[in-house]
Every structure is written in C-alpha cells, then in structure tokens.
Image (cartoon, rainbow, N blue to C red; front, side, top):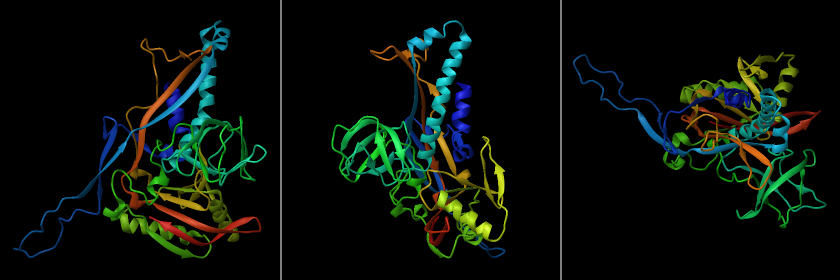
Length: 384
C-alpha cells in the first residue's frame, strides 16, 4: 500500500505534487477551514502622548465543503490467482501488475478533476450516425473510460457506456456497445456515477458559481479580476499578471499551467527573438518548460487557449485519510464479485481541494489565430 500511495500522490500530476495534503480542518464528513482576507486593521501613526491605534482583528470567513469519495478498483480472476499459487512472489507480481494498470487511469482521472469544476462533466455529445457520436471537445475523453449520458435538462439517459475509440481530430467517439436509448443533441457526458460528486477543481474556483458555502456576491475577494490585454503573448503579458497578484494579494506565483495553444504561443514568441527556453525537473520526475524559474507546465486538461498562474501554497488537499483498501471483516482486501469467478480490491480516499486565497490566482484566456502552424492571440482575459 505504501508504494501505491506514493505513486498516486506523486506520479499522477505535476500540480498535485505541488499541493500539500493534510488531515487538518476535517470534521466528520466535512471540511471547515477558516480563511483570512485583507490585513489586520490595528495599525496607524499618532501623537507622542495620544491615543494608540484601535485594535482590529483579522478578517475571517469559514469555508465549508463535503469530503468527496474517490475510488479505484482492480479485478483479478480466480483462474489467474490459482495459476500464481506456486509462490507468494508470483501472486505479488500479479497484484502489482493490476495496481500498475490502475495508475494510468488514476493519473487521467485525478488530473482531469484538478482542472475540472467538480461536476464530472466531460463533454457535450450529439446525436450519433453510423455508430459515431460528435463531441464538442475530446480533451477529457479516452479509450476505456466508462461514462453516463445525461440530457440537456439533467435527466439520466443511459449509464455505464464504455468508450471504445476517440477521434480527436474529428471530435467523435464510438461506444463499445451502442446506447439503447436515443441520444439527443446537446446531451452531456459524465464519468460513471460521478455527476456533481468530484473534488473542487480550478474550474469551480474560477467559475461564477458560489463556492465553499459562500456567495461570491457577498464576498468580493472571491470574485475574479478581469483585464483585457492586447497584442501577442510575451513575457510582459505574463509578468504583468504575476506583478498584479503580488501587489493586490501578496501572492507569489510558483506554478504556471497552460493548454497546448498557450504553450505554442509562448514558444513561438521565444523563437521569434531567438531565445532559449529553460527546462526544469519537478518533484515526481516531471520535466517542463520554465519561465523565470517558474515551471510552465502543459496539461491536456487545461481548456483551449488558457493559462493558469498559481500560488500552490494557497492550496490544500484536505483528506480524511490517505489511500486505503476497503477491507472485509477479517482484514482481507480481495473479495469475490457476487456471481462471478473474479475478485476485486478497492482503493478509497476521502478528500477535497480548498484554495484559501482564490484572489491570489490568475487565469488567462487567449483568443487564438492560426498562422504558419503556430498559435498567437490577439486579446486575453486575466482572472485573478
């Protein structure tokens, strides 16, 4: 379990590696965290024998969110177990092989949730033709993923469909078995059983919806800052956003996450001026680009044309426990699947992501235009 936990916590995603995981502020099934904003008001100048400045406490609000339930499950057939009975090492190799197969799935799903809005929403899907179904984006889709289809009104159309193939250029998918119900245009794909049950990712933090039990309308420091900038992406555009955060919130940017188009725009700018791009290695063995010593990481789950400038110290992944196996009453982790000659083992983790300084983050959205195979932008929106 120690090895598996280490892999799931440090090898899954560069951003996850930077975020501290803690059991603090967990109360029962909820996370309750006191977050401060602004500064203490008890400062001032005065006369030699005059009144001292009035004392004022820090500004606090309480963030409240429920622990989300994350699961990873493996399955081993009885035949495979019996074939490995010639030695404990053989069975260990079999179990390790299955757990290693779980890692890519966990890497995909956890990375997607970090940049998601907590809804589990993957893509908008339309009516199919010849077994193919058009989607608005293939970024969150991968072969083997099991999904549920909901109508545009939020009603479940069909669940438990496995994606057989993804045409990323044509933005179409095929299912392993055809849906029995008709799929209407503007239907929505969600991860199986996960609708509105995932962790609070960056998509939720940067949305206009209320967050952590607070109304953004009542708390201006939760509202995003928006600024239009013109011209192509360059170091000045990025630096202005970094300086803005340092000035308004005292936040030091230590991580930049971007989409492919944003990365290409940055690389094109550097190439125009014959500038070398530094490469750095992060914890967990990840290699990435660097901007003035700050890792600039491409992630497939960042929406097209977007760039996040983050202070990862303001994030905490609050957990009830680290990854654990579900055990039977006698402590076994393998249990027979009802009515099948197979055994399953389930990993669980109860957690949620909290950013205690949302106004200390920036998101840049770039309009892109294609030119000679590269991407540039004419206008962007900064959300701090």
